Length: 244
Image (cartoon, rainbow, N blue to C red; front, side, top):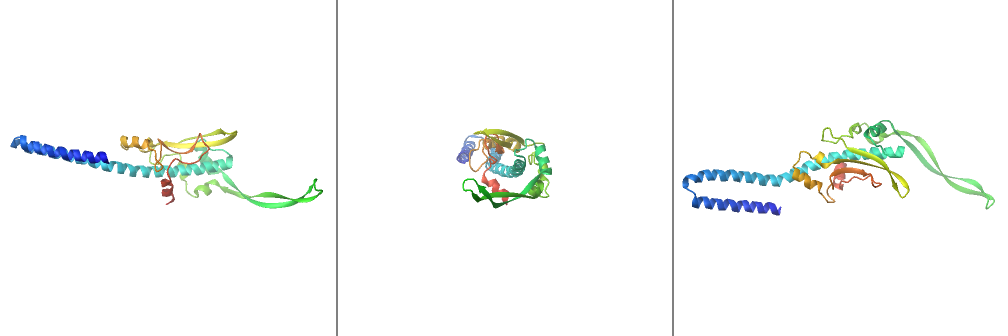
């Protein structure tokens, strides 16, 4: 903003000086031509100033709209992956496997209840109560119905919204965490793909973001191949928008 103000002041000073010089040194017959040139330059400068003010505003609006769509799809992928791990014990490594899983898999519905019974104690030579837990299987429920009901949007969740022909990058793996083999996954897309038609200088600035109110880094992602995490790297702003 300070730079913009200095530019505007510089243009005003330059214009005033040029008018004074023209009025003082140029012949009368040349003044109309120079006045037209200065007028055109003024229009050009005004347009450039307008662009420098409104460009970042439009970029922010486009960015938030597109990021919101992408993040909503990443949330769907996260739900499907968590269901996949709950049923199979691991994450899906491809979208084909993940979509097939949502289409066909079922949750097992169980009920847990406490119980107790008497057992003979060799120590006390009498029957003593022992607590236990009984898990009853009540039935199954479709993963598809549980997560998406009648909505078939999960069939296209590999596609990046608003970017024709572009799909998310997804990988799954197993990492060692203190002797525990932990399943992990990551899904991501580059900001440069989402905002490919936007000004390059603003995109470069966006890729360098470091703020709790912004998506930091060069990608929007969920999960991690290095840490046991299923979190996304977007700020709470986009979660609030998704809840509305």
